[in-house]
Length: 405
Ligand SMILES: *Cc1c(COP(=O)(O)O)cnc(C)c1O
Image (cartoon, rainbow, N blue to C red; front, side, top):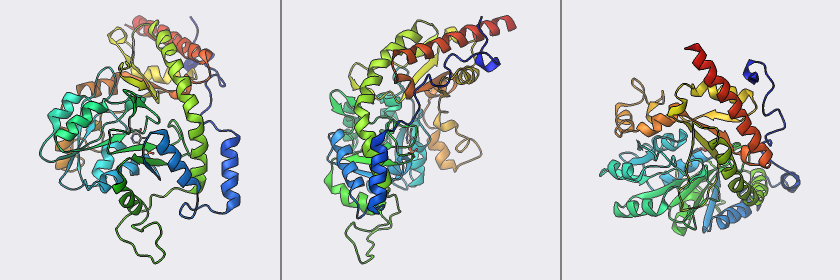
């Protein structure tokens, strides 16, 4: 049997196998050079960020977009603009990146994590309904790994209880549910352009929305409380500074132009990888709801099933990384972060954090892993190499653990 790369063997996916990320070409280079030479690097008098916002909104069939410094602050800004704060509760999934919950705490509200669906990793609708209290003001679902949440059902729940529906679309640029952009039924959707995301300027974020009445408030809050045309330092609110630069605007325009083809390529590659990994056995890939019109495939989610109970997830990820596969351990369940665990955080925050049972999220935290979306680019040979690495590592680890007993 072939020696694992982690034991000094030859890697199954040597450097050059998986396409590099981020991707850029002459379009980013020309954009950067155009902005540098213009000497307009600040967005307020500039045109690049304005153009990007119009293009990004149109891409989502939305009226408006506002670019901001990052996805975390895009959530904080959305909550602040909608008046969510102290004394309010916001329902979030327990399986997500930390910011979904910490942004809620940052505006002074309480985050109430609820469990996720065992097939799609998206927020569980029954759990959302159970978690609603008189203090609930918003639902903040995450289109996890690029699989859209059931926006129809969520918007009905939100309307019934007079709650804001804010979509965390940090994984879901261009994603569509039942024929519609996921932004359509949310009051505001937030995006991230951090370097690992489906499009990037290194850092960055955006809010996308249809309600024109929010436009002025979002602008002012993101620009030090100052209206766009102000020349008299007449600050009308206490905002902060979340503005992006024209350099980011130029990069994001180039990244957005490339995105539709990349989304299509990943949609084609994902079933291929499903079939290859499915034939290995013991790997439970995330399922796709038949109502998904376009999946983002930000993270390729895999759970180790009962057949693989002898495999240590962390050791598997380490072995895959050594083979050259961009594999990652899943998020911890939100209530289990050291920041909120027993003895830290305020009792009020802790109570809300631990109010709902989250067994599926905890199972994923312990037994699931994910692959970077670059494994779905570069053609069928890339997916075959990734599957070969899994096959190699699982044969060896399964056997090693059996002989050790
Ligand atoms: C990345 C991410 C964020 C935060 O975005 P940043 O740009 O990194 O601040 C929020 N929510 C989810 C689900 C994310 O993955």
